[in-house]
Length: 391
Image (cartoon, rainbow, N blue to C red; front, side, top):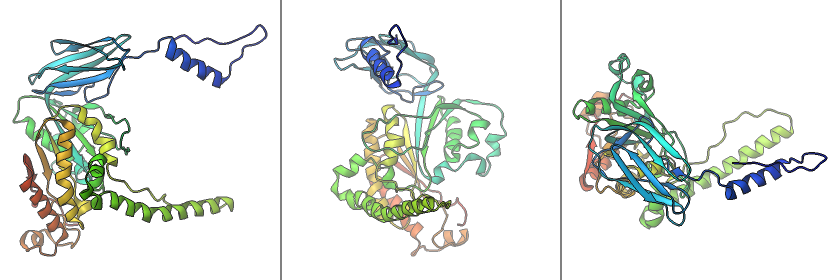
């Protein structure tokens, strides 16, 4: 890109605003780079889902030829009148390895060391992101200096986003070894370790987790808005929480302002705005749905412990909407039952396992999870009653 400085015989004239204006003009009219690939899980060191038709998109100058090269394929397409392009790749067999590249009118994007296998996406709260180094038996993995080349890990950064914001993956693939496993999800690590012993293709494990979050935050907001029967469990809850938060936040700002005017240092925790319906799906999950995957594992629910009816209503909607976004039919959806952590009554493990839990909020929540599993097809409930610790 060329940039010119306007000048006369006496002095150079260089104002930041003028420079920015000319910069934008030259980008538009003198040919700035225009070719791009929409971000996805296809990145260096990554896993591409086997046995599925794959779709990749991006932008280029209208009418440009865009070429994909990799995995023994060369696929071409033409960008449309708006500059959008789309390439479909035929299903690839598992165990392939390749560098790949996309070539457009004025550039190319290269991704190194990709393999074809199975991708599993984990979604949930604190139980999901509980780190491997704090789990029982972690030394089996952490004391092993070798790398398991069959497994690759992706940790999606925490992010809140509103509906219709540009959402795309923001993590990166890393190897399955002690240094990367130390803070990685224990549940996801052990799942990958066990599964890799029983299948002969690479595994990609993607974790999108945020502790102490509610189910409605992981539900697509679009789903909630389109289904009025969900409003009492989603949009109305949002409104109630915002109504409760606003005066608290207003008081905080007022006290902080008064303290500043008086020359007094004011220390207080900022009252955080409540997470709303769809905030985490939009920020952390939606961008992942551009890729094909093998299945989803959902580990969340303790935030609904005193509202098990919410889980009974929302969980089927999460499953249905996620499947709709991935457009792979009834892909496997596993979810983990809340373990034997009875924080509502602080009983011993023996009491939890042996007593009829008629008054336990946790038991009602587990029952709601079981009921969802019984009515939604292609799901599996992982029972963890023999795990966990006294609250």
